[in-house]
Length: 278
Length: 306
Image 1 (cartoon, rainbow over the protein chains, first blue to last red):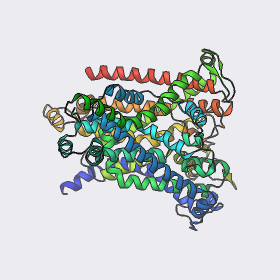
Image 2 (image 1 turned 90 degrees about the vertical axis):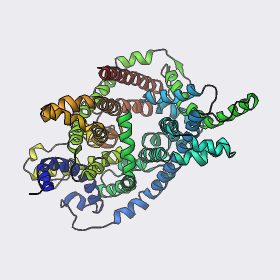
Image 3 (image 1 turned 45 degrees about the vertical axis):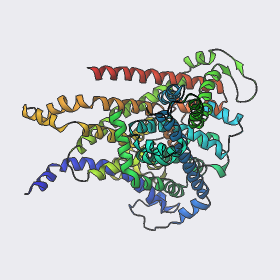
Image 4 (image 1 turned 60 degrees about the vertical axis):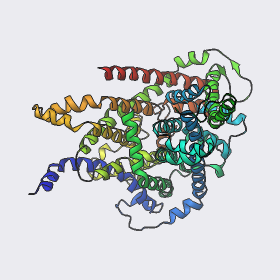
């Protein structure tokens, strides 16, 4: 026996353990997809791993009748707007906290740091009151601004830490060439901070795409609801239509799984560095 | 720290004013959507208010009522129960998987990618999938839900249960699904921690004749304490505040048996329209969480010094 084979045999038990956990992760998703291909009757009776009759009709039904086309569009709109908003607003502030001088700079920065450390589980109550007072309940812009705020503190801290470690040679050169602070932020600092921006984009995309409670409290109009809110509304209305519900769940889960698979290196790197710095 | 301008007094003032423009968007959003609600939750917790109409100042009466509100303390116990599952089952599993992956092993990347799939899904999706798997209905004497069907297939049909409507099992099911979704976080962080341990430490221990068991206790565990404490704190804060799985798996139907603090806050706000009481719950719960995380942080600082 050569060395690698021996090692693999030794690791057989480890693989059995790891593989069984991996299957436990994947199987419910497979089951969701499998049930989405069945009709309303067979989903209750057919127990085969692969359904005897496969049809994709539930996807069309969920998309049009269930209104998931609208929810899907809304989720994309909210995710893109919030993430762009967070990157712009937090990078401006982080750039100032790291590179510019002004009175009260550290106090302003620590305000965001402290906010990160205080858990406030019931904050949606006063937020709901406030949005109604401002007339922003049940509006897209109201929900978007709330969600920008949710991701703001952590993004500012991440970017400020990144800017602090970044050498300022390029910025100095740009300044000598007569660039304004705004040009330096946009043309030099932001492109150089790409790794940190990637982490911010990914984690906030996941967060906005999966957000439920603020959408539930702030958006009552069907046309404004994002996917998670739509799913809960749908599950409440059609509590027995499981094949259709599974199709709707698949529509909601697939984009985020694809984004994750495409970006998993950044995600794992971002999390790992968080753990080690912790 | 570098500054943008060379010191010229007048230009400096103007330039400093310009610098504030960079933080204004962040500060404005933060003030409106964080600081004001923060103030208002404290303010409203001292009032009785139905969401419309006059606010009546009642001092600390909401908090006094909360102290003897049995359902509230039951909900805190329920969240603690989920947290205990997460701390033991979820974290032990995560650590075992991380130890298994902390070596030259095939398919390591595959495992790492797969274990982190549940955490990227929304709790609504996860809760609804599991609600379907745990479905308790029957048709023509056949179990419909996958778990009950599976149990009857392997001859354990007496174990089949109304998992999510039986008060004895509903909360445990929620806790287990919470662990299913959450262990990937702990796994990634603990694996990252394991990989920062200098391999020479193990070599040195081996030279000294340490068994792999003693290497684990004397090298791995002490080096992992800081990362573990981070994971523990995040686990506790996450599990205590979990509530979306409760909504998506059982809804608010199973009164009191599966309620957690956040669903109580929602119920007080949306159901009975007691906005002041809901805010008092929020403040009370925040104080509990801050106390718990402070104790854990003090403890972790002690451990780091030791």
